Length: 304
Image 1 (tube, rainbow, N blue to C red):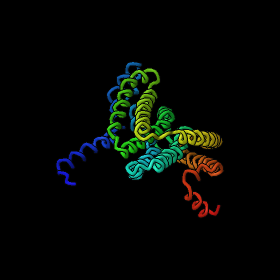
Image 2: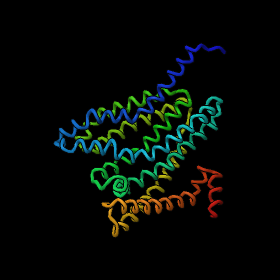
Image 3: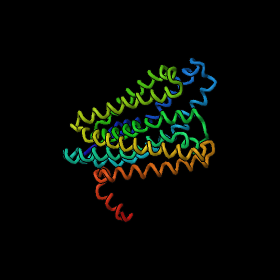
Image 4: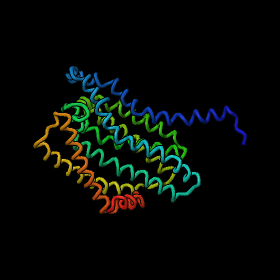
């Protein structure tokens, strides 16, 4: 085959646009807040706290929420070559296996992380910054949105792998329009948390569109992923209740108003919760189904 440089550059340029849109998804949603947040807060008489609230929303709380999402970025980049290979070779069994593994491992890590972050919002926010009731409430509301961030990242990677990346741009624009249209009404209803809810609705629409397009072009079904997600959610709730109980117990002697004490609370509760979640995952064989022989090797190294 002889392909001109002009055609090569054109292909590179057109293929890069969806990747760029995925990268600027979050700044686009932040732009919606910059355009409307202060105006909405002023309309309900909260202009005196609007600047501080916007800083908590788009800087402090969001940095913490992005911690679980970084896991999704790694998965999405590692997923792209294997998905593309299975799709191009028309190996539907391998393609379905790759997607099942990607989505389930992603949720296996992200769901307990956001549950723990919601339950421990007070000591986590205090450990990283300082004790602030507004920041704590925003983080508690914002943490679950990290699941949608992660799913958008991975589903966009899948669309790129099956050469349907143009729909990533469409889904993101739909989500952005929903964010713009709901931002002011929800802020008027729920103050700072309203912006979080508008972001959640926008990302939810984008994720659902991406997942629908994947099914439409590949025939992939989410039934197994949904069943496993229910089990993961149940384990995460049990873990969250355990962490909440430990947090309440430690609060009898420690306070989150001091940074060192907040760090100590987070460390103890996180380790306790992680051990509960790991025990449930191993006992139910869920970890074995997701990670296979790697779990056996890990248990052998730990002498279990």
